[in-house]
Length: 56
Image 1 (cartoon, rainbow, N blue to C red):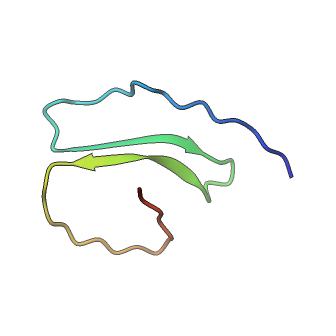
Image 2 (cartoon, rainbow, N blue to C red):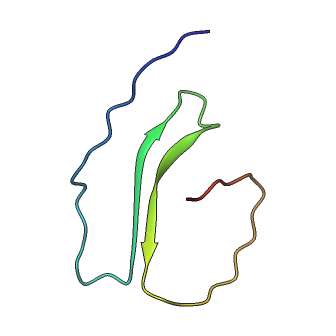
């Protein structure tokens, strides 16, 4: 197993006028794993997933 460090952009471009912000920091070579953040104004949305997600 190879362990590599991942550099995250501490100041990604954010549109202050947008109600939702999505930024992908990392995606592995296969596209099977990605990391990033999602932020939104309070709202309700219906989401259907065909993948696993971990949120903190």
